[in-house]
Length: 397
Ligand SMILES: C[S@@+](CC[C@H](N)C(=O)[O-])C[C@H]1O[C@@H](n2cnc3c(N)ncnc32)[C@H](O)[C@@H]1O
Image (cartoon, rainbow, N blue to C red; front, top):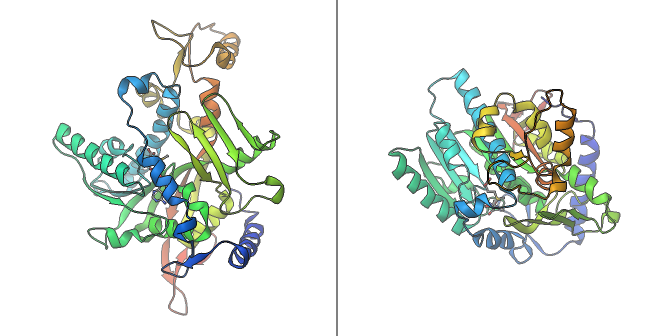
């Protein structure tokens, strides 16, 4: 488990409050959200751009995916998600075998995790995403899978902006309690504004059972900032990806709305927002979500590759270097210097190693995985519900 630093929380909180004061005073027209949170007006919102982008992403065929320059990166991302799902469904079952598991898959896209939930033998999944066409594709893929397997978990599909709307109002049973909420590669879109991040966290936490898990994957803002600092125009990348900050870092790093352009070969090509992780942890705590694990993808690999080695091989997370059979390397020869060095330094003088091209690994290591646990709640002396966290009680939202 990685250590989670909390020392800068007070500083972040102060900055947050002053930034929000500035927002209220000086920024573009805004309207009040349902519970009084500040939400950018529809006119200025970025959500429509994101929805349009994901709605227009083409579904790639198997052959095209196999020949993609991010074939192994994609598989590695799927491995990280599978491990998160398997680990935490197993953990729940260790305590309560046979319990029917209910899941919220928020920012689900086209349902990249449909089969993972099936393998984890869950009972019911609610899939939610802002992109209507993606949700429609998710539903079609779910129905195909059910037809193929004969039986599958039950599911609901909700097309909505999870940073602005209350998801609970849209569930068939608004009293549903989830064992797990999963948000894969999507939470950062809510860091456009404090109001949107709050709505997202409220949707995630509201129906999560005490001791239930919330996990996900996001770009690591620290990594993005560190790498962008090395470039004169705040942009960096390689032949498969490019990131460019869309604000002037000399004016400081915004806590919300820290926009950057992210281009990833054939997958993402739209602006996203930096997630200040300490701030995220602090905000999440207000919703009864306490961080229990955080690791960049390189460390995540170290933590779990032993236990989930078979899966790494089964879903082809690494390519063989040098290439074997009639397969060509996905990258250029110079992308494999690390593999050559590794082989040269091994005492058994192996002539083949499983690896990822440098270009793909540079993308993978932008991301981090996190896990939070929903706290139990109690009542304070004023009859207000408060969460019992490991450090102190936090007011519930
Ligand atoms: C990179 S995709 C990840 C999809 C899926 N979770 C996966 O791992 O394959 C990010 C998803 O977040 C969704 N998203 C972005 N902003 C959203 C919002 N405000 N509400 C709901 N979904 C949103 C996008 O439509 C997109 O499907």
